Length: 183
DNA sequence: TGCACGATGAAC
DNA sequence: TTCATCGTGCAC
Image (cartoon, rainbow, N blue to C red; front, side, top):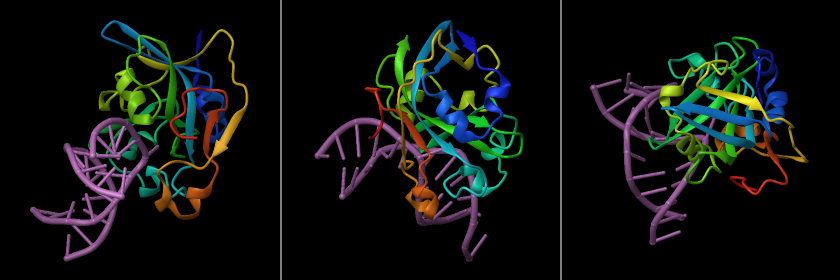
């Protein structure tokens, strides 16, 4: 097991998204280490990407996205759920990868397939927004051997309002996973 | 200062 | 298909 270095995140979000598949998301809180295997993600390509929150510009909410890579961008959606992203690329590019589904590895209870469910099971909330993924609490690590298999590309979920950007194939998931939020 | 609307999930 | 529920961004 090896924590992913800053340079892993500091690349284009499409590359980072695909390479995150098969990696383990780890959250240590109150002495409990929760681990899940990332099996579904979406890439958000910055201010020009109308589906990305960063297309609204630099605001209090999107501030973390505009910062350095390797940090967690967590936000509340529909007043009910949380979604977690990993900030990618050079500082200021405001690109990110949304984590959409995990396969349970350790200490996870409840479902983990879906961005809101994933955060709930991992005990991730607004407290984790801006968290450095190279620190000790929340991070991603490579398992002893990364098993990926075939990667499927699909349209992103829930971004129909984004015009032609909604049609881009920016969602990636592991074909062989039993845990995908939507086919 | 007010208001429409979500990168969702669950129920019907 | 509908609804829960509230922070955000933008119109006034």
